[in-house]
Length: 326
Image 1 (cartoon, rainbow, N blue to C red):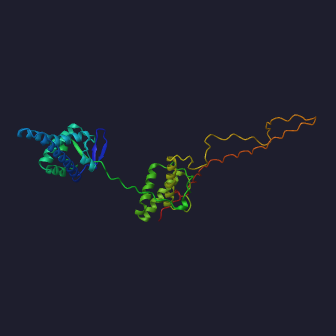
Image 2: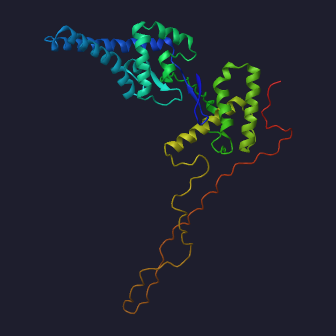
Image 3: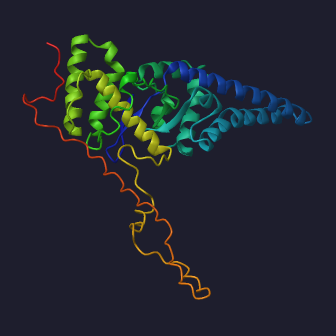
């Protein structure tokens, strides 16, 4: 990787292209340009058949300069350093500060390419690229450019092992908001490489990380749960909550659900007067019947109190329960 520093003191992590990939890109470009030159030459020969030999020679020289020198310069200028060969090989020409090239950069590279690539069949360019630390040929040195690799293979991402089935959902009420991102990263790195460590060293690291997680969550350590299994379950719980938040799940990660429109209106108590439609009119002197109130609705039960995580009691030894093996 090339340590290039911009004017703002920013280090650019660029990967310079080496000789094999650059040579393959030049060969592909040369093949395209030669095929285009042959096609254009045949058309010019038929078009200039009526001219004399001097005029035909002048047209041939002008066409050679235009197709094999002017076209590469125009292509690199318009495509910002990506010709067909470089595009196929995943390469690109940039300035030394990482910015896109302009016409003057492409002009210098194209003019030097006539000497380096065409007149010497690439021998000078190969020697200069092998000698240069960043694989630059003379055209790149004079133009202040650099050929870099755009397609860099990505690193393989290792998945965190799942927790044991008997621990699934056991830590759903754990408050993980106080655990910093640096500690999560350390836990993930340990879990993805735990099988590559020495058993004693891995158990000690797991106990230390589990103690830090327990200290951040403020809950006592789970009984009879290995430190590595505890870390797996906690990471799995955090991933579950992140997935629920990302996909718009309305269920809270822990605690009872909260009504979206506020608490319900209180129901009337038993025995309270309920307005009726009025007593019926008396009939032939009989006493008016007493209106009987309808059956009262049962009082709504109060919502349960929200869940409050228990606070860890002070440990009697300075630790949190995960002791590394002797």
